[in-house]
Image (tube, rainbow, N blue to C red; front, side, top):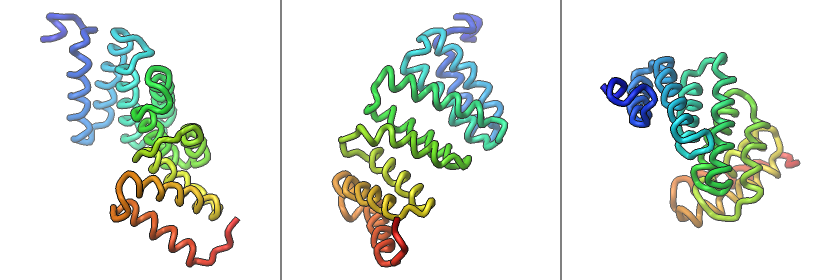
Length: 198
């Protein structure tokens, strides 16, 4: 009905296609979800231009849809849309914006899933290096970075990042929050383990 009344590039279709994609994803039909999100993204870029927050958002949804499909042949597209989305968010909103940071975290988690831990680390390090504000996202970035170092056997570096993570978690959530307690327990276990620290 919308297409017949307003044409196949109406901005109204963006929300409709996104909702249709969400429904398909809930049913586990990832290819169909991707199909609808490609249409939404195409319209969004035409209507709002490529360098817009709305285009970055549909690009992010598309990256997540490709990632959710879990197929290695989709890795190139997943990487493409995460990279594009992150780049647009940085230009439009700035590197310190919560949406930019959340996109960075989502991207890094996917990179870890496919075994690109060093790339994930670099993606997070770019943000954390300049970040001074205490937030849930910064704590999560530090936690992921610390875990990457621990997995690589770089205990001292991992410990330092997790200690900073705990400092932020305590400020943001309080010391009794499950996330703060979990990080504190990990730090305590690392101290007690007597592992050889790099």
